[in-house]
Image (tube, rainbow, N blue to C red; front, side):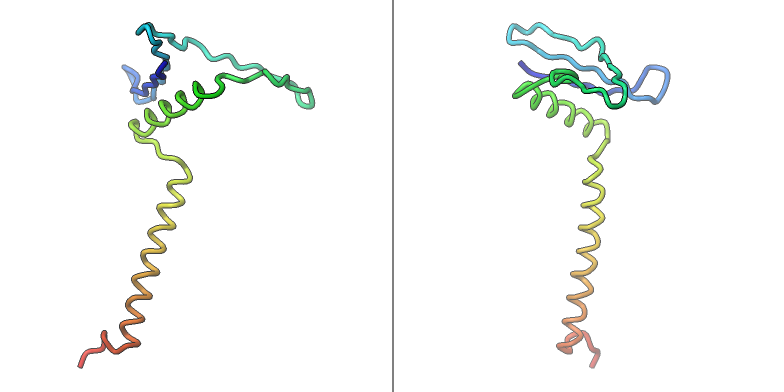
Length: 111
């Protein structure tokens, strides 16, 4: 089985549209047609099996397909943005350090 996730733009707007399906070994499709949301009052115990959508390799395959579709749609993980800023900061610090080392050795001074 292979999960298929597609994110596209609605026909009359810019809002994203999410479609999900699972292609079976016989090439048939199991199309996700609805997601049900159940509300539980505060302080009520939620049964262990409530809210489990997928398990095991099927869950992993779905998440991979969803992540790939989101990436193609231009979404990036929130943590990636933080890491990108950190990498830019570290690059700046390396350049400053390299410049200071050169200056201390007299390589950067004009003669």
